[in-house]
Image 1 (cartoon, protein in one colour):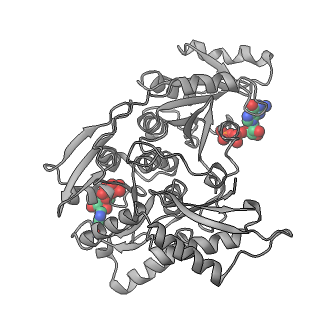
Image 2: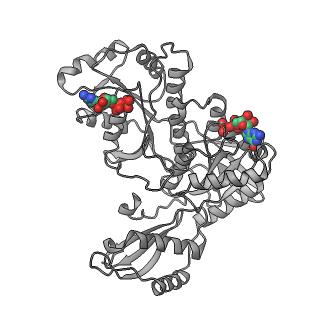
Image 3: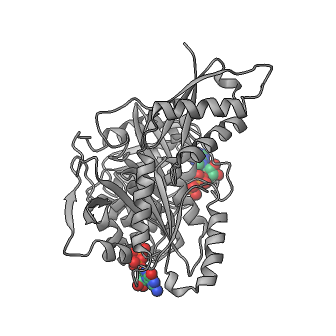
Length: 460
Ligand code: GDP
Ligand code: GDP
């Protein structure tokens, strides 16, 4: 896991976990074959090695956290829009580009400098130039200065600055990266609804899973207190909900409702819809993956939950539309969900119906439990007793001719629970032993629905 090499983050003043305000999102948009994946891989180079070995998480990645010039951001390849669709007013291009504009902070529009602009390119450029978000126009496959001249066709479309780049060879990439990170929204210290007692919840899932229906049921139009996000150019609207003396913030309800109206489950917009999930999860403590039980849990669900797992958020799996499926069949739905989402066996499953309200109380109770686990701090005494018994039942095996000695354990962080074990030889602690320790921590202290992280550090 990528965090393993970075070590725990230093404690911040903010009661919310680091990164809750969300990394800026950069979307790559363009026709198929212009080189979007190649550019993606180049921009994500520093962290592309992050892969899930667990089954159920797809390997072809369309998003990655990366950084340039010291600024971190989430990069998304939105997939190509339909080049055959020459009528810009028809769904394809317009829909695709509009979603990217809505969800991203910065857009990189990629063309192929070695071919003429197509009608699809021109339609997209028109839409992008009218947007308020920063857009950078890059002409790819400019492998040498000779090709740069061809990139200038973009100027004829009213584009002010063209970035000729070669994603394959790296030419011009630095200039593009520099421009992109300088366009990020300025971060402010203020957090909306800053309050330790609050639970920040992101409802995520595929189009038509029932996200707006669920929100309407729990938020209700009239009781909704809205907060525009300060410090960003985003138009996220969060909803504050009070329920049995507890307070919850549901992240970006406006985005969910908006999506409820436009999403048509087209495959071309699937990758773009992941953008919404990323940005909501970034700002949440608890991610609720909403699945359509009548459709069954799919690859895309695994991808979305994988985003939460990767960001180490607390997780709940909610199987919605249970009213459409018989009780017996729900057992099968749950079983298959477990298989698809096998990389997070610790995430609790709740069966609900946004339509008739069944299971919604249990959903809230489950959110409360995983939030508690997420922010739990284990006392030093308990932790020491735990550690002694682990070492007694199963000391770390010798590895590479070295017998690692584990000296002590501390909880470095909550949200997510993060532990540090001091050892004489961090590299000699075998993967299977690391997994054993995590499982034992989970068994001893609960940690339902929460990724548990353990770092091994050398004694100084
Ligand atoms: P996508 O469909 O937009 O994701 O395009 P790909 O990234 O799959 O690239 C399409 C083709 O263009 C592949 O054969 C790439 O190797 C090639 N390609 C991508 N970038 C460059 C580049 O900068 N120069 C050259 N010469 N070829 C490139
Ligand atoms: P979203 O795209 O995830 O926001 O999904 P919506 O809330 O717009 O729901 C998609 C469709 O599923 C709508 O027709 C809803 O009425 C329907 N729906 C949502 N939840 C349920 C449910 O629990 N049971 C049934 N039968 N239908 C539901």
